[in-house]
Length: 610
Ligand code: DGJ
Image (cartoon, rainbow, N blue to C red):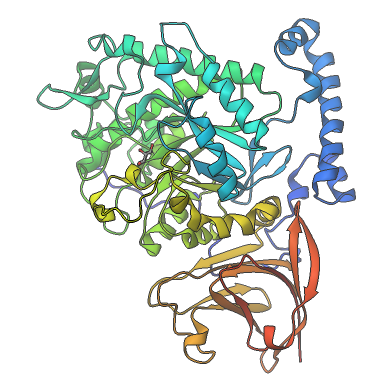
């Protein structure tokens, strides 16, 4: 096996939880959101506050500007095409991802946007079911609904596309003031081909499956089935073309291409074409991406280059190329941000190949996906980890210079979402949020939760409820959080069992988040169950925004012999991303530090020393 060169992780510049450069410093990599925008946008933002009223004026201005450019550059024929089915007056800027110094932002209406998402259950994207989805989105305070589009519904007959379900999603989301992230359940859904239309399922010799080493077909589509690739490419392109025409409002802000692609039951496809390629040379760009040092003249095979991981790396290459092709075709007609999601492997103790789903954008093959599927803006972890250390690890691994962190699926404890925010996430979406199971019978005995499939637990008010306080806190300040994160000003932590404090470092100030301080008269003891979490943003050298649950926050100056004093602790509410002062907290409310309980609470804290 050829040795792997030790390469610096491409995301090495990503903000670590321990240290934040002082935003005001001239040497700081921390630039304001405005600094990386084109001049026209920057001038505008410099003269305006980031609030909704001004955004509306700004949007209209940009719409007029784009129309002028469009007219002069593209001309009347294309203008007529663009006008089909859509009013240009209502057209908004395209959502897009931007990056600067390893930090990322999703721009919606040309300003950073935090996806406070919620994913409906797999079979909830049908028009007749949507009335049970929207109230759950409202209940949880989501700003974005993640809902599948089913290939079997979208293309009931070859080449005949039915956008009625997509149109129902657009209409419903708009009337509930939500954005959408559509999930294209195409060739792959959880490693299988279950969402292929019936006319494809009935021709398995043409739209063939992966075969294992013994030649047996598995319940997984082959990434070498050329006709499947062609059909998926056409269908996904038709979907994107429909969105371009039907969604000038940009209700849809991103699209997920396939769902948890990959295969269980074999490490790779063993079809003739797959075998031929597996026994051939690894493409040079894959070697480079994976940091394999091979002499320029050498053309190692997969086994020579990657040893025991050769087959899973090969399968990742095969699947990434396929999805990269589908994504590129869709993006060519409508360039929305696109991503693929991964069914993860155990990260703290990764098992051998075969113990996890092969082929998807797992942590060990992210560079392969990056070179083979450049039309995907992100590869994303479906982070269901309940172990906080593992949850954090996944956030760190997928937050890279070349990859924004987004959690298209998550579950477990809402406090762990603070880890995602601390790793600069552009958003997250708990899975299974709808009210499709409205009838809970609390008195009826049921099996313990670990004996039930996940979908038997989702789809109720009770299931969504734990996320409500966090979403209520973040919803009115989502754009502020996204902007501050893009500027590198935020650190966030979650309580772990056995760890009673977390320390954060902000230039001249250290902040301590302590858990369970009342158990021992002001000394931290940890909460009986780990429920705490906090977010601290440095607004200016001596001014912070602090929010959290079940914890106490306090600050300490680094200067020796100096002590912290509060100049003011302002309690406020965010209204449309503007901090609105309510009162100053003092006395009992601040003498021991800044206390956070179950209530959503945001404090603007100004510090001095004596
Ligand atoms: C991960 C998948 O991506 C989802 O579509 C769903 O099947 C959940 N697992 C489990 O219910």
